[in-house]
Amino acid sequence: MSTDFRVVVVLLSGPICAGKSTVGSALVTDHGFRAIRSSEYLRKVAAEHGLAADRRSLQTIGDERDGATGYRWLIDEVARPAIERMPQQGRWLLDSVRKGRQVELFKAAFPRVLHVHIIAPESDLQRRFEERARVGKVTEAISYAEAIAHPNEISARSLSNIADLVLKNDPGNVTAILHRVCALETDVV
Image (cartoon, rainbow, N blue to C red; front, side):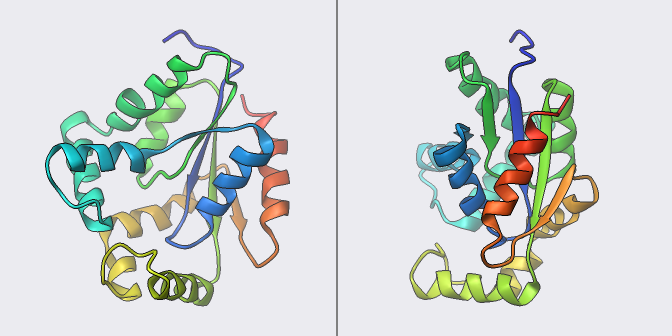
């Protein structure tokens, strides 16, 4: 792939239920970003192998791809093919990075990368998780304590230490987050 300095890749990270999907959807819908969805790729791999597409299965598949590719699958098998299919698209959003090595590889592979880590108070995270479970948006019966104890969740939470921007997602703060991301996205070099 030729290096195109017009292309910017925004990487979202943060704990479960921090609002990454909400921020990501708004960036796509209202700000011209194109989504790169690792979860779609992982669901496809799960289907090809006859596996369930629940959170744990997808995490396991991602971990296996990390080991098999030296963490490069997210770039080589998901991001680059998407970007190459749409060379006119300048703004890209990766819905979720979970490991520091993934962030490092993206920053080495693309000239303009902005890593945004979304946080929220622990009580809000738990409340959102439990609400998702009540309405059936959690794909398996696990507790919040089990979900946050998973190594991928622990790793995702630690990415605040290497993020370019850490933003708190309080109720009503999504608009402010979007403005901060879009303002910084234009300055990323």
